[in-house]
Image 1: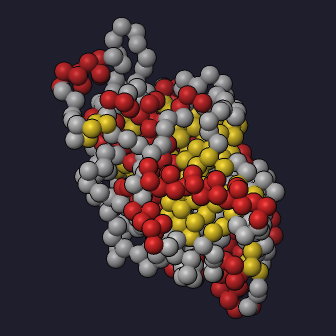
Image 2: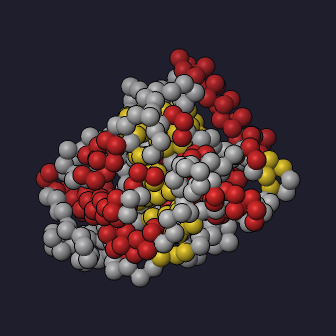
Length: 477
């Protein structure tokens, strides 16, 4: 992509400071790791998330926000590129033996913002590669507790935020909470902990929960093991909330809050079987709260269906970058998503009524390509490798919640048959309005044959338009 000239960059920077024009349009993208719709503002009356709830009251809360692939690295590449994985190449995990890479020609959000004059910094979890594609000016490190302590993450971000008030900044703030991992719990000595609650964190006042008090969602089994894990998960989410509060304090103390767009979102769903790594709604339908300085109304709850492929175009649009002018090798640079910055004050805007999903890997051993289209009424999932048993992420398989299923030999996992979870058909069709748990597969029901055909046609067009390599399977299957 052609870089801006020094003169153009100088003019861009001057426009923020001279002649009384608007203040720099700062951006904070606050991404958490494996959080579902578990927050006070999303209706959970047990979990304590006061700072997130306040952000929702001041901004826009999306009820129909979806990742495109329920896997950490893969989803983050979509967030930062505006492209589905089958186009950007980051099919699965970046780290270790998985070693998936984004294609080198991809233009990422931090690079595009830097080209437009933004200062950029990453703090916490990164989890994509190569670095040259996802390059930030600064990588902020050294905080106590690592990326599980969002309070110290906020503190070490302060110098970057305040160092040059005349230039806008982009802060990519990524926690490792509430991802599984780390030791055993200190507050519940007999409950295995996979949510980082086994140590103390500077600046954090731990909020603990009793297993009897948690809300077990219908897609999970109501067992002692699951309740104990949910209590640990809640604690990790409350720790995140304190980091969000601290970051907002820093912005306000430096008179930056009113000209900073803040996004709060999760990369994928909760780290339990039935959610993360699946294209069922618990894996895809995620929190998204945006507070934009220039939105006309606040405290909005919107039903607009938006996807993580639209995050990069939305932020570039907010930054004042004309997407139509972006080019690569002399050709227009095309994102799979589109900006929704202009609908933040609308509760049910027209034209935002469906999303697509494309999942291929999590760990490299977990090949299970799925493509999906989700409307407000229906979801269609195409399981391209349906002959295979559904693969488990290593941490989800080891989770006490799933191990109890194995030990007890139960036939049900939440409301779903265990056999149906492990061995899936080629086609899945659900009426999510009447069957939100996606239990009754309508794909073989003749009453829904026209609905199925319509969604299949739309999905195939999407695959063709987005240059999905897996479209070749239509030719010989």
